[in-house]
Image 1 (cartoon, rainbow, N blue to C red):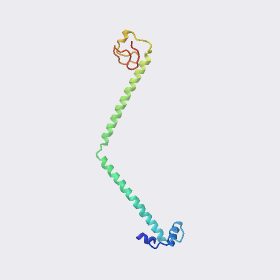
Image 2: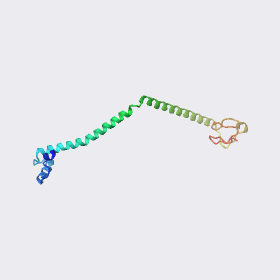
Image 3: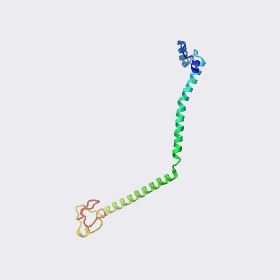
Image 4: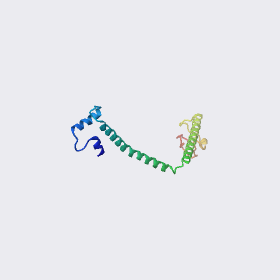
Length: 149
């Protein structure tokens, strides 16, 4: 009701009032200062009505976050993560060194699949091609498929 009185809007809204509304936006001197003040005040009220609920929602989210992080031990979790990373690096280094050893053995021992092994060498516990563990009953290497007999 207050804004209707300021804006002169109500049951008696006339074409003259519409012209005043349009001229207020165009800067024409036909619009009065009270009308312009009413538009500015109404705009501020609408802006406040839109911003206030959003601010309350953000505040609630912040409170929920602070309550949720209360029971978390960040130092302990960081230590667990660092331990896991260290274990992963250790396993990666072991795999890398084993791969380098296998590559070196393959380069040192050049044996083709067509060359059968004599019965004396068949009693060995390692494949002559890839150095994988074998038994005396194996016919082929389980790692590289090399013919052991």
